Length: 460
Image 1 (cartoon, rainbow, N blue to C red):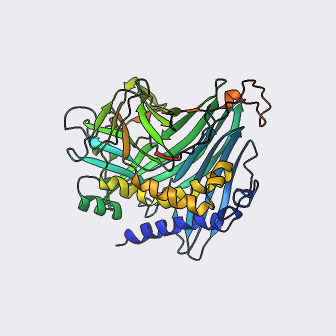
Image 2: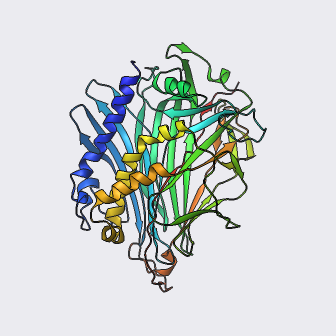
Image 3: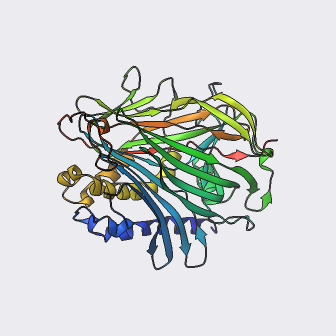
């Protein structure tokens, strides 16, 4: 049970993040500027980062980072863990991140979309030869980064914020960087195997670096392109049962493929998930279903396009074991599928649901006058958001068929359909002359687990 206690303490300590927001003016009433009590900045500013938001509790101290970008009716934000310092001297770093966007569509509908970091999936391709994760029919494992009980004392985990930066007019970037992250390999083959490998260190790997950045480019036509830029360093070490070292290259088989698993949940309002080009409405999947089109989220009675999820199909493979690194392939093709959810999938994100709904709801309450007019208090919004988070059945994956333990680069692009082409910028001073189209507001909140990352191990 030695591995269980720190993991439970970590989850308990996570709730400390709620304390400063709960007691802030955002909890019951809100006026513009009240968010400064929590973040040290206001939502009226163009961009900022606060990497030292501290929380003190009786058994632990925690800190997190908040980054923000604002151009007229478009806002993007990131709330991420830094570290938790336990009273017994242990330190925990979890790559929890909540990325969100708030904007108005060309029809002036109010939209909230969010993304949380969760896990990736490795499977041993043996069923159907379809280059897709057929969970339940072939061996598969979750990769869950968490630095508690690090079995390699010579490696010190660390985390740092990549502050919000204005690269050029309409182009912004922010993110987080993690060093020396140990990750637990968790079985998906059975309930007993899942529980045992999650709670106890059956197989652990050491990843040198994880970098996650959000690149935001505002186009002249009102589209906002958001790319999640992932860099996953090499797996330096591997250990069985927390005791026995093993070469990471001895673990990976040529038949193993790696997937990014995505979870989609809409908090409020009417919406549909469709294929991007044909507009075909999709139903939540019950089994692995290949996709040959990108996805679109449409909102409202007229099914206005609010967000395109453009999954980049091409990816690169690089070998970190050489100096300098060598590019093994510049042109590999990823596959996309809808997945039927399994119990382990929900368990791995369940602990994030209350915190994500809580934080997302408070930011939404502060950013949107429409939200405040519809909900008497932020507490009502939180209750609704938490329920909707758990009720979704939407899962999809991006699979990299050729992997061999090499470094993978593949960036999905999110395209927000905004009203920025119709407004005069009060934030940056840019002049745009198209008139607004007055119409009713609609609110959509989403949680999309975007984990397009790869566990990188040394090649044989």
